[in-house]
Length: 327
Ligand code: SF4
Image (tube, rainbow, N blue to C red; front, side):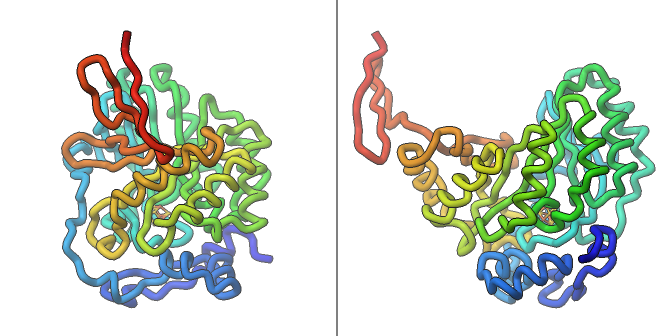
C-alpha cells in the first residue's frame, strides 16, 4: 500500500484530455472507479465530452472582486476564505474554483499579508481554510498556517474544507490528527456527493477525525445524473450521521464554466430536501442553498411556509397543508 505522499506523486494525469478538462486521480480513486464501475464516480472525476458546451463564466460568483489581498476572499462581513493551495488529490469536473485549481502553482508568500488583513478586520470571526484542498499540504505546513490563524483573538472559528477523506483517505494519518486536534475551534467540512465515495477506508479516516474530537460537517453539491435523486441523497445523509458527520449544506451547482452539464433542476433539490424532512432524522437534513453573485448564499429548503395571509400562516410539507394562526 502506498503512503499518501506516494499516492500524490503517482497521480494519474492526462493534461487537457477533453476540451481542456483535466484528469487527475490518485491511484486510490483510480482503483476505486475501476473496481466499482461507479457511474457517479466516473461522472465526477473523468472528463467527458458532454461537458464541452461552455456557456458559463470562469468566476460566476465574482470572487476576484472580493479579494482585497491575494488568496483571501472577504465577501461576507464576518467571514473570510483563505486559498492555501490550488492543488487537489483528485480534480472534480464540476469544481467551482477550476479557474484556480487548473492554473499552475499558487505563490503563498503572501501569507503575512493575509494575517495582517485578518488582524486589521476583527469583524472576521469565521475563517474558512480551503483551496484546492488544504490537506494535500505537508502536515507541518498546514499546521503552521492554522496556528498562525488561531493566534488572532478575533477569529472564533476556523473551518477546513476538504475532500481528502474521500479522495486520499490514507492522508488522514496519526501525525495529522494529533496536530489537528490541538487547534482551537477547528471544524472540518468534508465534501462528499455520493454513497459510492464512502469506502471502508474513507469511513475509517472520517471516524478517526471524529473520534479525536474534531467536529465534522459535510457539504455536497447537487449534481445532475450523479446525486439528483431522493434515494441516493437519503442513503448518503443517513450514512454520514452514522460516521459522526452532520450533513451541513447541499449546494446547487454553481454556474461556472465547465459545470454546464452538471447543473440539476433546482426544483429537484427543493423537493428532495423537503420530502426528506418527514422521512429521516432532522439531524441528517442539510440546508439546500444556492450561491448567488448578488447576495451570496440563499437557503432554498427545507421550508414549510406556503403563504402568509395577515395573521394566518399556511404551512405545507409532503403530507399536505395546514394553517397556524399567529394569535
Ligand atoms: S476537491 Fe474541491 S477544490 Fe479540488 S477539484 Fe474538487 S471541488 Fe475543486
